[in-house]
Image (cartoon, rainbow, N blue to C red; front, top):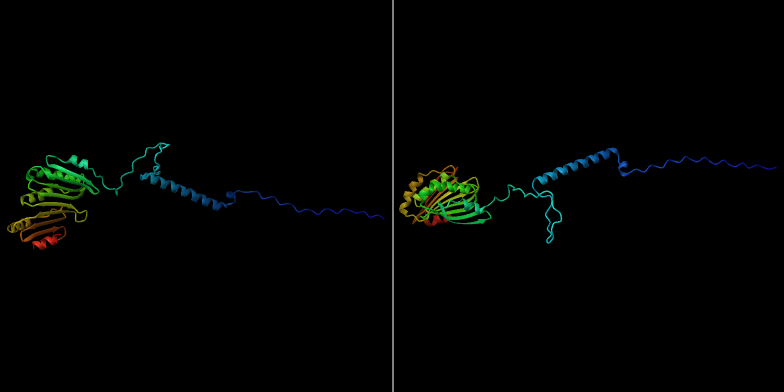
Length: 273
């Protein structure tokens, strides 16, 4: 008796899962994160472009010139390079030639000048008698100071009166003040008249000095000084006369009490240093 062998039925196979589709890095980033990051990048680019435009508008060159030596430039910029604009903190322009060309030779002669880091230094002589030329000279000096950067300007009259101006860089002394004090210095035989721009709340200071006065003349000067008034355009007025044995001094300033005093010559000299 034969026995038939029936082949076993194959076991059912499990269904195969589909192979996951390969996605790029951008596709794998969540949508919310992608939108936020992309927006931030766009905003940053806009800000960067605006800053660059402002940087160029301020006059700072975007590209530094080549420091290589011995080689010629291989490319020419299509746009011409403009000079860097003058900023408020730059030193003021100093033009010695312009100042010398502005001086009127019939008023000021034998001019010597030099340029320093803080302005122009000028020396010269006043042509003719001060009393004769003063009306025109005072206006000329006022404009000369206003239109130039003057470190010092010293002029000498035929009678050896020295008129000096210090630190007037595009600032000036009003014509009326120059004329008033120069006329007094000339009439009273002073040796020096000095105007100084202090560049402070004090403003302009004026000094009149008599260096060799007889003691008998001090009383006369004292009476003359009492009648003097300080112009509003002068912040401080100082008068000093050195006699044979004592000195006479007067000081008047804005917001301070006018005072006048005498000192022995030795103490006066030490006090004025």
